[in-house]
Image (tube, rainbow, N blue to C red):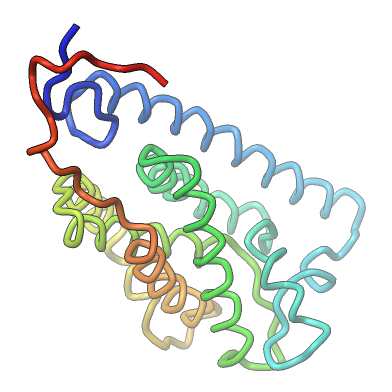
Length: 216
C-alpha cells in the first residue's frame, strides 16, 4: 500500500480522516454541554450560589479562582442556552484538529480571558460564562486560517461571523450586562494559542509515492 501526500490526513479538507475527526469532535462537544446544564441545574436546585462562590470577582483575591471555574457557570438557563450552540459548533472544529492542541489551547484561552477580566473588570461584579472560551475558539479559527493557510478554518470563522455577527460586537465596551473584557481577552487568547500550537506544514519533498505506509 502506498502513501500519497495528504492521504488520510485529518487536517486536510475532504479526506475520510477529516470527516471522521470532525464527527468524533462533534460527539465530544455534544457531551460537554449536558455537563454544563447539570451544573446549572444543581446550582438552582440546591440554591448553592455557585456563581458568587466560584465566579470571577475582578481585582479581589477571593475571586481569582473563578478564572478556572467561571467557564462552567452561567447566570441561568437562558445564558447557558445562548452559549450552547456556538460552543458546540466552534468547539467541534477546534477539537477536530487534535485533542492535545484543543486542551492546551483551551487552557490558554481560559487563562488569558479570565485574568484579563480579573485585572480590568469592575470589582463590584461577578463574571461567569463560557463566552470567553467561545470567542477564543473564534480567534483560533481565524488565526489558523491565516497562519496555517487552512481555508476551511477561515470559512468556518466567516460562517459563524454571519450567523452570530451581532454578538461579535461583544468585544467592545457596551452598557449591557455582558463582560466585554472576557470576550475581548478570550479572542486574544485564541489568537495566542493558535500561534503557539500552530501545526507545522509537512515537507512534501520527503514523501515518495512508492514508499510503503508504516503504521505506528
